[in-house]
Image 1: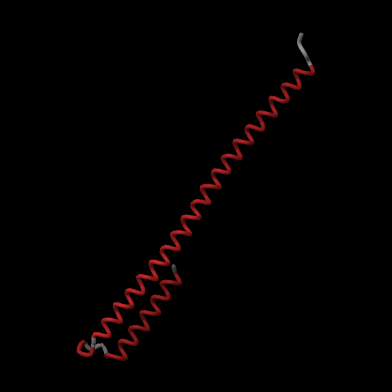
Image 2: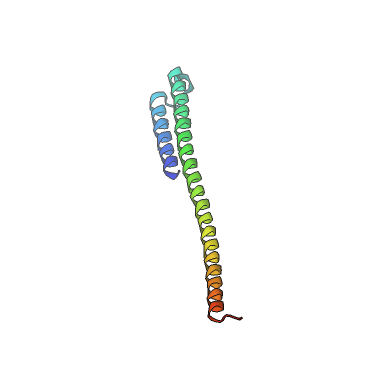
Length: 103
């Protein structure tokens, strides 16, 4: 995003320089081609901005999805560890009962 802003500022400076060189900032020298150029610049800027926004949003959504999956996997792991501990405890109890049968 930062590099995109820097690129935009550089292009704005170049366009101001070209505008100054062609018109000397006088209103009488502004022609239809200058207006068309400004509109084209705005259009291109919107297209590039939309594409960059779409890509960055997609990346953010993928990262968020990975975070959710990771948290779910951590919860599953904790549950499996609890179940394993419970099974081990039951096995130990059964082995103890088998060693000392009470008849």
